[in-house]
Every structure is written in C-alpha cells, then in structure tokens.
Amino acid sequence: MSIAGGKLYTIGNQGGQDVVSCLDAVSGKPIWRHAYKCPAGNFHGPRATPTVADGLVYTLGRNGQAFCLDAETGKPKWQADLGKLFGAKPGDYGITGSPLLVGDAVVFNACLKGVALSKATGEKLWASPGGVSGFASPVGFEQDGKTAVALFTADALAILDPATGAETASFPWKTSFDANAADPVYFDGKFFITSGWDKGCALLRLDGRRLGGLWQNTELRSQIASPVHLDGHLYGIDDNTPNSALRCLDAATGKTKWTHKGGFGNLLAAGGRLLSIDKAGVLVVCEAEPNAYKELARVPVLGRSAKNWTAPVLANGLLYCRDSDGVLVCLDVR
Image (tube, helix red, strand yellow):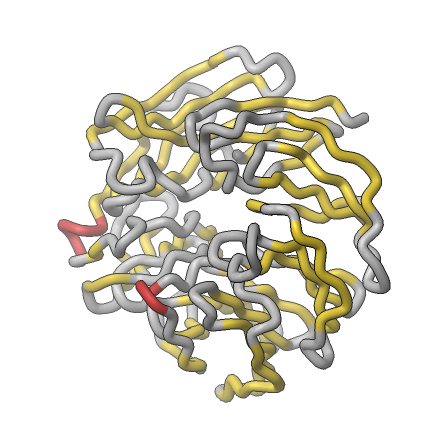
C-alpha cells in the first residue's frame, strides 16, 4: 500500500483483471478503481506497490503493464506494455518490482537490466535487452553528488546511471529460480543484499566503479521480505529457518546477534521498533534492540487462510495490513 494526500493506493487481481484501487486512508471508503485485463498467474496477482508523486500514480502489472494514472480520478495519463515494447519477460513470479522515480524517469526492474520511461509521457528513455529480470524494486541512492540506481537483477546487483541505463558497477549474485526479491539496503556507501533458497547474504562496498564484497554468509536468507538497517545492525526474516525466523545481524561482521522463530512474513521499522506480520496473520511488535529479542505486543489482525507476505505500512499514526486475499485492515496506533 502507498499513502499520500489522505488516500491509500493499492493493486490486486479479480476475475482476470488487475485492479488499481484508491481508498480514503482514514475511512477505507472507495474513491476510484482502474482495471485492465491480466491473468492472475501463479501466486495470484501483481506484486508491485503503486508509486505516488506530484498527483500521479505509477503502477506495474505482473506481465509488464505499466500505467501512469491521475491520483484524484484514476484516469490513465499514459500506459506502456514493457513486454511488447522491449521484450520484458515475467519470471516464475511475474514482473514484480515497484516503479522508481528518478529525475524525469520512471525506472522498472524489467528486461535483463532495467527499463526507463519518461515519467511525463511514458516514452522510452532507455531499455536493456529483453529477458527475465530480478524481482526486487529499484533502489535510488546518492553517489558523488549524483543519483544512481541499484538494480537486483536475476543474476547480480547492478549499479546504473538512471539517465542512460549504463552499468557502472556490478556484483554477481545468482539464486535458484532467479529469486533475487528482497530490496537491496543502502547505507554508508555499502549495500546489503540477501536472497532465499539457502543462498544467504552479503555486505558490499561501492568504491567508484567497483562493487566488492566485505563479507558473505548464510545467516540471513530472505526470500521475500526486505531487511532494514538501524544503528549498525540489520534486521530481517530468515526464510530457511523452520517457520521463518526474525533475526538481527551485526552489520559490520555479519554475525547473528539473536534469532526468534515464529513464522514471520514481512516487517517494517518505526520509532525504534520492529512491526512484523507472521504467517498466521498476527502483528508482532518488538524492540529494534540488537542485544536480545524483546517482544512488546502481539495481536491477530489477519486470517490464517491467505498468505500474509505484504509488509505492513505505517502512515500518520495508522497501520495498514493486507493479505493475499485482498483483505485490508487499518489499526489506529496513535
């Protein structure tokens, strides 16, 4: 879910159509919806979060259907089929990364190493060769006073110039089923990457045009959830641990500080706390504390029948939780 201007934007699939929905963020009242034909696919539906800026909403369907919609009305400003135009192919889980706005461009993790369109018109700015991408969202960051883009592709972490798509650095990272899905985490000139299927994680340093490894291990194998970095520590979900464990690593060394088993699905960090949804639909709140797992609260918010893989979202004192059946719950945590 994305929240902006008192509205909530999200996307799902119903009856062979992707549906972009806009709701009142406080009451949940529907405001508009935009639908287009798209098969549900395996693990039904789209995965990219709508990106909202300057009165516009940018979305991406699992087969590469890119849209720019008016945030107030839902009317399309432009649309582009990344598969037909550039040869983007959905991998085993579809095309899934959320659109990233950088300058005049909207960048997608599609084709082998990205596609960029004009955010105003949808016209092509650049496109890499067609093929299967990774599943993570592009990540923007500052390098030498300029904005660059980190793209977790199907076989590497690639650093790109968002104006041209030129690759300036890369680090090989191959995971089974091309499942590089957790967003790279950037801090202090470094990138933390992780993937499941027993691949593991690594901390990389970006030095000009060189992306080199500082350490690599299998302490955190995040198949879906993107980890977070706080005060020199990394918090994430290890999906190879039985029932998926919440885990804290020392960012400098990669060593595990603590592990808490509990079938976790996804997480966010806010106010010095971690808020995680487990696979049974229970919201768990704990301290973002590196020395020990310290649980503060837990409450059931979603059901057990659906997949509870969507990260909870906190905005303006309201916490939004959603499952794969499209059930959306808002909690007042003010």
